[in-house]
Every structure is written in structure tokens, then in C-alpha cells.
Image (cartoon, rainbow, N blue to C red; front, side, top):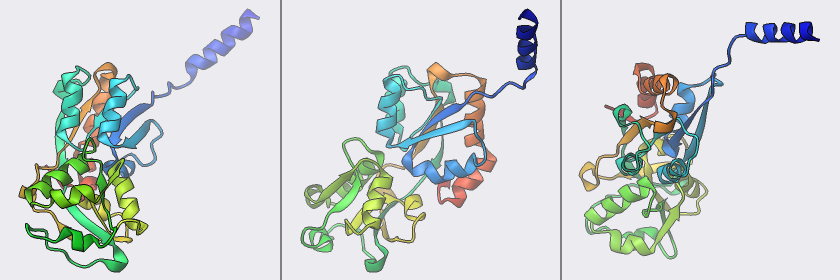
Length: 245
């Protein structure tokens, strides 16, 4: 029996070590680019959702190695709670905020003070975006609408989605006549068209901070962060429409 156990142990020791799986919590708008960057790998797992949802999950102890947010506020939230390795924090990407409509009814819109938003939406029409209470795209949208003097009308006509991809889907299905999403999200589907781009000065710069989660800090996590922000990855982000810093 001892000989059999020794033989089994020897065989196990001779097998190559299996790399530990790394988990990346990432903003929903990064889905396509990140999946392309790690295509073919089996040691990286993603959880895509609103940055707010992911940050709160990390706060509650979720086993994430990296956090990739769609705004600085939710990264700050985790830094303030001592949950991020601060020296690993970087912000290599930006984006643009756009107004989209179903492709079949898309007509250019001029986003400026004085726009008759109620008439644009029509009777019962809703403007969909991420929930401004916590979803980054919704926060950017509210700030832009406030700057343009359109929030007073928009607030009562807002459909609040759980993340930017959920907002995009509602416009794709024709369930909302207009939506506010990132330009990179609009680019992944032919079912919507960009009818306007919000002026860059109507909202704070859209920023994607990335960092290692402190409880999972180590060489493997840092190496993956370097890969997801390195030259090859940046080329893929650019191809997907992100602004690379």
C-alpha cells in the first residue's frame, strides 16, 4: 500500500503546476475589449457589472484580484476603505458620452441649452441610462444634462438601468427612443446609432482606473494588471474605440 501511495505522490509531483485562476471585476463597458485581450486563456475570469455593484461586492469580501472601474469615484470608495493596493492604481483609458437611438429612427440631435427634450422623447418616451444614483454612465449623464440645462426635464423621464449595457439593450429593443451610453458601447451594435455626442466640457473626463485588490495582491495579480494595461492591450482598447492615455 505504501508503495502505491508513494507512486501516486511521485506522479502528482511530476505533473506541471496549474496556474491559479485570477478574477477581474470590470465595468460592463469594458466587456468586449477585455475578452479580446485574454482570448484563449483559461486562467482569467471576469465579472462584468456596474462599477458600483462590483465595488460593493469587493467591500463585502468578494474574491477579486483586480478592479477596473468606469469612474474614479468608485475606485476612491475602495481606496478610502483600505481595500486597494494604492501604488498599483493607474488610469490608462477614457471614453466619450453619446446619445443613441434605435437605428431605424435615428436622426441627428443638437445637444445644447434650449433643446426641447420633452418633444424629442415624445409622449410617454423615456430616456434610458445607468442609474445616476450609483452607475458611472448615469452620473456622467446627469452632470452633462445639468450643464446643458436639460436635467429638470430629463429627471422625470429617466429610465434607470443597472449598467450601461442594460441601457444599450433597451434602446436596441426599441423600448426607449433614446439612451445615453459610452461611444464604445454604441459601436458594438448595428441596432443603434449615435445621434449626438455630449460636449467634452459638459461632464468630468470619463476615466477608467485599474488597480490590484489589496487582499489578493501578489506577483500574479500585478502581472495581469500590467498585461491589461500594456501596449498590446492598449492597441485593442483603441480598436474598440477607447481613448488611450
